[in-house]
Amino acid sequence: MRAKITYFVVAAMLVGYFVLVGGRGIALIGIGTPLTVIFGAAVLVLPCIGAWFLWQSTRFVRRANRLAAELDAEGGLPLDELVRTASGRVDRASADAVFAARRAETEDTPGDWRCWFRLAVAYRDAGDTPRARKAMQHAIALHEANPAPAVR
Image 1 (spheres, rainbow, N blue to C red):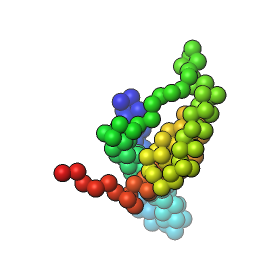
Image 2: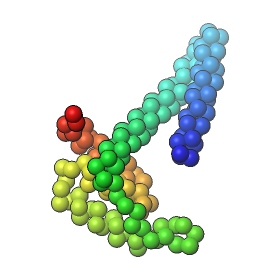
Image 3: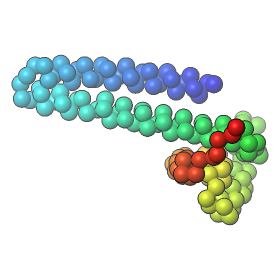
Image 4: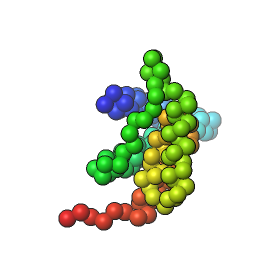
């Protein structure tokens, strides 16, 4: 829950920033000289890029959460098998061992989004966020390509 609150606070702050920067861009364009119009247009690009990035991130999180909920309903969420230090940090050797098992599982069934989801979690636990994101994107793509039949 804490992560959701943090996400919404940061997203709200970003939207506020987009409004402020967009207002400055419009004000520059409103001055009407060629130089200020160019600067104003350039300033308006920043909130557009930021809004696109925020939208893509929100979409990714919503899709990943949907997969997590579906996997949880099936009873297939990965268990927390990691050994932790006294401070609560994940033991690197433990994360590597879990990662090796998840990678082998994914190599055995590369078309199963559930395996890719668990691999993404293992990547994250091992501290490799970029690969975790790519694995989760692959899981989402596999899930959307082969949606589960509707339960009646």
